[in-house]
Length: 192
Image 1 (cartoon, rainbow, N blue to C red):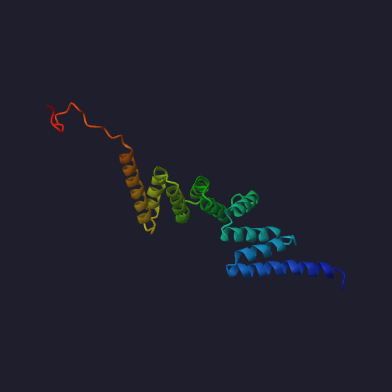
Image 2 (tube, rainbow, N blue to C red):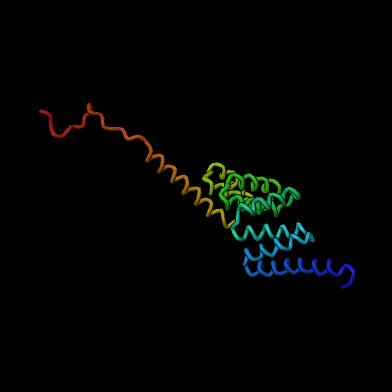
């Protein structure tokens, strides 16, 4: 074998793991893609690119805890990456952390006010969390800045339904006042 040949062979093996992982990912076999990406990480070549692909595979496979930790680590290295932030917000929402998702989406909206997508995602997360009041200002902003958004009608419907549900809950929990025995309503049977 040529000098340095063994290192080249080993490097090629890790590259092949990465390529096979990409093929599995394209076939939507995310668990298999993740397994290949984990093996490719050992090669240390393009570590962070491979790590991102592994994190994305975890998210696509609904492994929210693992994906959340991995995206958190990626964001430590690149805290202003809008794609990573958006993915982290989505992962938070899918794992049930609506407050965490809302915080990230709020930040994305203020950083990129020209993006209707971030604003719509922010409103959706607030409504998912039952924060109708919190969704009102972003929804007004969506109506003003993006009047052609196909989601305005859906959000308005969700807000109306949530308000109606709250009214019903309030009516159901209101104390029932018994009739006053001294009222002018006659009692039955008549008193003797």
